[in-house]
Image: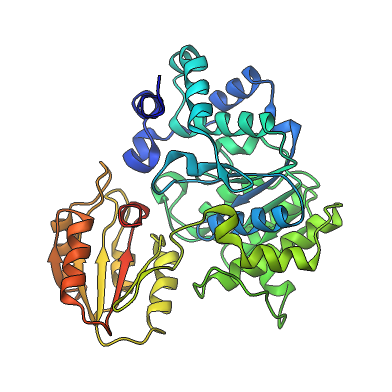
Length: 407
């Protein structure tokens, strides 16, 4: 078996949520617990940090990993989704898991996969946890896949839990109010384990405080801990990254209290070198100049609100937006946020979940968003480039998968 065959097998045997949506989602931890037992609980061999939240958990996870690397620790990093290569999900000190390691895992455990019928994320999590143990990492930063309470990463006993923020996303699975979604995310709060909350929101803060009280877990709200403090210079340039930076600083202070040796120099270096050390992509990433081309993976109401805020601070003659979304989300709230003074290029990523570009164009028109539809992301981007002058600005986003196709 070669690497491409191993990945094809995983996709066929266990459909990926990011591509297929709710029909690929399995609630409950039965399969995860069974897989964990088969592999002899590998996550117990190293320390872990658990990161949940609607937006910012990827950037937060990468920043933490980068700082810990700079502090001299061997660091596992488990995130999702990937943009181009499945192996982006599983890294040790920034290096992706090898193709051979993926092949060996699939070849050795096909019978188990076919017996248990785990979801794509369940089997991927088992692979990650086992790989980190084999690599003898000191600590692993584990990003929640979806929600928290029933997410298959929630079998770990972390040193620290982090919940970045709450926004309406995956409402068909997590609940249709911020309070319900917060309750699902709060499921990662463990007994006597500190939890850092990135943003104090009126709907979610009482939920987090109540669960923390029930679990005797110390709770810290990052946005109230560092008022007026100058943040280290960060390589991640989106204005929304200031929130993530504050969250990481408060989290690092808790890790220091737990005996992690993390110097100010390691923090400054980790913030500056996060992209090189972890491979993070797609966060207000500049892809070209004259015209300026920027992409961002913000894809729900909270994420798009921040993207629009950042767009309003840019200087340009005309704004061009290449935009696509998935079909199983309520998009009206997102469309209502988008700027009307832009030329739109509606498109779809090459995945089953993608919303048809003509349907998107029609719905966008009801919000005063005018543009043309294109059958592929590359066609849409080329059209935007052809229409743009050197002083224009092209933004690409709306979906992780739209961004993935142009990076």
